[in-house]
Length: 493
Image (tube, rainbow, N blue to C red; front, side, top):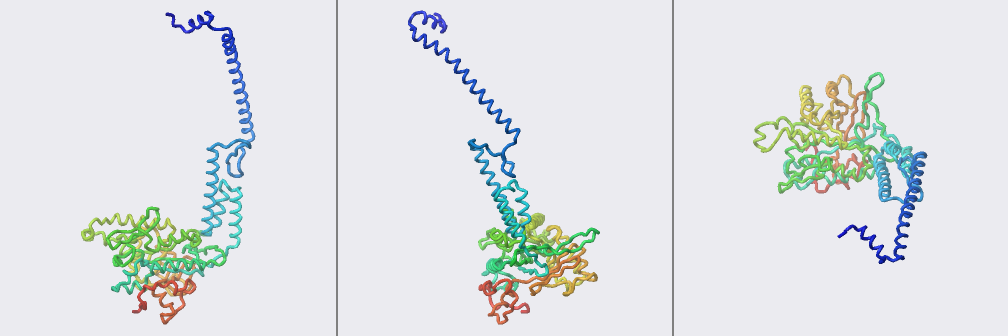
């Protein structure tokens, strides 16, 4: 049997069973197919010609762009694809990001940086960027220079988180009541000073070293530019060591690097657990500035000062802890790890905008101890603490002491010369005056104001003394924590 289909088809035609009409239809079909193929080919050729012409025109004239963006725009009448629509949304999002970054810089009074950011962005010619730049330029033209000699400096010790533990009647209550500030008081102080237009600046913003053309190094006054009505101030915190004697008295136990990469604190709870949170000045100040960026001048934070004899930041970093006896009493203690973590937190503080300072190694009265002990203490600080913090050029004297009277430091001041040889350039005592600032050829000296239980209580009307040391900063009656035992003991008691 012949299974060739073509042979079978020829037989079918010849048999007469394939009618003439069907034969004509089949012939028509055979003729039309090639014609359709030719028409389709011509249409395709015309389409390609049109596309080539458009491409050539685009290459010759360059793509249409938004001003200053470098982004191509579609031709009029051309429907945007999904990818192109998403691209426009991304572009708009990028513009928003630039505007937000500029707004944050301007909120911190860095109008120069905000303007530079927008002018250098791909969206510099956009109406939104130009309007923002014009607004920042207008504000910048109204700024007023702060006199660095009229900048006040306030300071705190470790903040009391739990007043029921700090004020529980034990032998340490008196000292806590005199020298510490409660969390509630600290937050009220921040809000009150913010409401009055105070702006936190760095100690280094007041004046800094510059090298002249002849190689001479001298101190130059800083140009702190703020809107009218704003007042610059410096903040510091002493003894950020979380001493062993404070354990169980309502304070943080140490500072750590948080999950977000910023400094925060640990605090031991009654059940033995450890809680992480805003348990001292640093994380509380960070939170406040996050909510009020205009409280900080160009990212300024506080000066954080350490002693060294008990370690820093809650880590037992002094060599006296590197003993078999201490390890036996504290299983799992790793001296090298303590120093490593302390150094890590110190760097985190600096990265977050804080300035680090000496509070002497042994919390000594640096104006009264012998010169021999003065040198020993300074050398211990350099060997045991600066190896963790890096070089520090600020010293906050303990006990409100100083290494000279109110006259400028002189070349014959042996203590000044020794500290200067160790890299110190900023020297702070404690002074109840609103301002005390000296700017010498090679140093800056500033008085600080203690915002603690003692100072606040004796500014209250009910104290029977009613001094007026703090009214320029806040209303003491609204800030003073009524959970404090009163009267607050005097320093002589």
